[in-house]
Length: 309
Image (cartoon, rainbow, N blue to C red; front, side):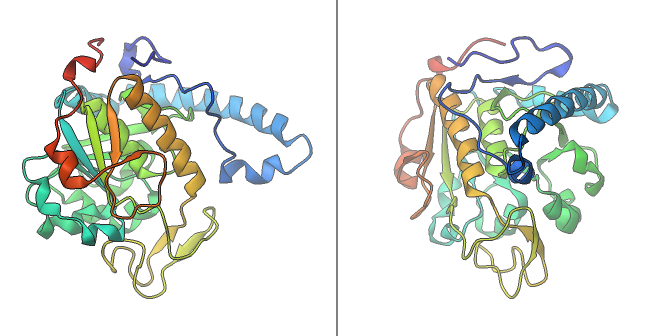
């Protein structure tokens, strides 16, 4: 059972799992240059404290706003709505083209970013769609806003979504932690899959199977620099996912893996499981499994889930 960094839940506070003592976050691209300077670590620590204080104030303001209150109502309604069930997190790698998506019939699943391009291949609607990267929302926010499903969106990018119903926003929390109950804030963890895993836990899933998380790219690039796609997109299930001329950023796989390790630790501490069923996936953080077999096998016992509010 994970203990919570935030034990209370006043004013819609997010509850986080305590991170394992042996996990220390890596240096992020945002901090890399600062750490290369003399006394860079000390300077980063001072800056982090100041930014955390400002973030706490922003979270409080957002929580009290109409969007914040409306979002919290959505998250509270979703909390343990699917307690004890197995579900699927559908990532966007090209291995989805080798995955039998018809198996998602009668199985709850979460889509991410432009995962809606799979609509004609999916047998039922998703539980929700999570979209986090500003470049995705800037370029495709109108398409995402037209989807008839619950949307989970960062509050700082809400101006890209021209609707309020079925949209839950989260303010940016600078603490790199895994949420066990989502409130008014989250840390994005450098990968939208991290948000989807937190939503899966929040919903009460005792097993989350992941598909399409290839965790490899055709080439590398600086995650701090905006790239422009030349030709078709080889890194996603659809060559037009980031089609010619689209803007995006290269992922920082080391940072992704740290978020996955936090996710695995939180699930396992509560007797839950995350299984990576990606065809030939390159991520080594989660246990591997066969998609069809995992869907056919029962989830861990519901009694292993905390009954704490």
